[in-house]
Length: 114
Image (cartoon, rainbow, N blue to C red; front, top):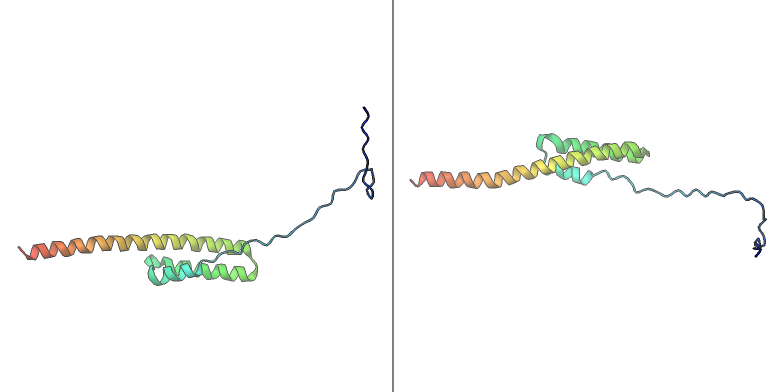
């Protein structure tokens, strides 16, 4: 059996060029972690990590405003890391204080009652 291929009207039967369409999809804006840095600076500024995180957050925001997305991502990543470390250290200090202080108070009160 012979197969007959028909070319739809309006198209030539010869080789055709491939057309490419470029679509620019806007990427998600870089986060600068400024609010988290402010909280780390005010509430958990252990070893000045909150201050360093705040500085890098401001740098990330500045780079984002200038259109330098790579620079903004670098500074934001550093700010995020510093915020994580500051948050963990502040949490550990709060937990240790909330455990150690009652133990010391109980020990002193038991010592005074003897």
